[in-house]
Length: 140
Image 1 (cartoon, rainbow, N blue to C red):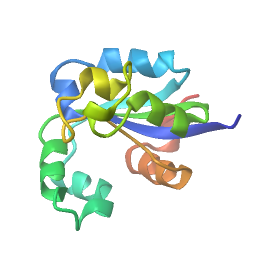
Image 2: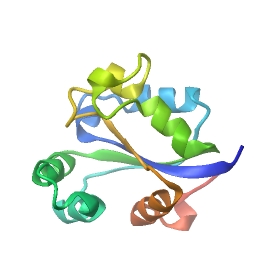
Image 3: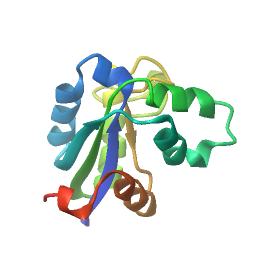
Image 4: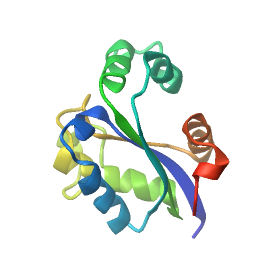
């Protein structure tokens, strides 16, 4: 297996409901280590930059509004095949389609407020991590 890092966001719908600890417990139970974590209030500009890949999609404005409406918890996770492992523990984007025991099945409110974000590829993870963390903030 390959030791890798991935990026995670615990979204405003989850932080408003004080679910950070419960979500972190699921992350750690999946064999991932949280090697960097901080609570931030994403600005509108930061949200637009982070989700720029979706700029032409009809949900972009709503996504930016949701992500900048309340604090989030940004994280770097590390482990064997961390990207796939975290995507598995997150569950399907639509919580109605998520497997039992996944973060989104247990905590998401709906498809738009689905509690967490995770990187989808090593290249994406590197870009996302660099947007929120400097090297000395990541402690393995």
